[in-house]
Image (cartoon, rainbow, N blue to C red):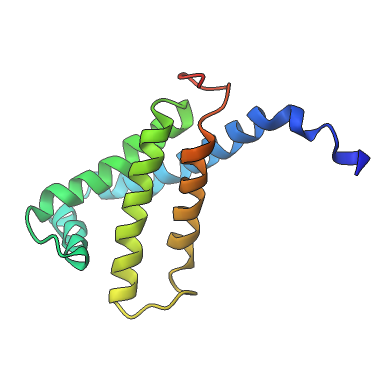
Amino acid sequence: MALFSQMGNYRNFGLFAMRVGLGILMFLHGLPKLTGGIAKWESLGQNMGHLHIHFFPVFWGFMCAVTETIGGIFCVLGLWFRMVSLLMVINFIVAIAALFAMGKGILESSEAIELCFVFIGCFFLGAGSYSIDKS
């Protein structure tokens, strides 16, 4: 269609807009987890048990909170974007496993599933030209 034939010229702006939007939302989602303290981290880390990892729940919970908060900032900046995307995918795999273990179905878990696929796509696409890494 002629109307959209030039949109490919704005690919990097599209990546920038997606990266900034996702990064801000992940930062806002992760900040309460990061500032929640050891009890919150332990609660988050218990979710690793659904993947049969039962040691150091405080560490895993803290890493979840750091990934979402600091990873969100790095996502906005485009800094180490592929690494952040991979860590987010791992984060959402754990979230999906926890939701399914709680008896939630696909529809109730759809936000985590959708974001997992979005970050898989981000991993392959990269940050684009409008980033600190410029990769």
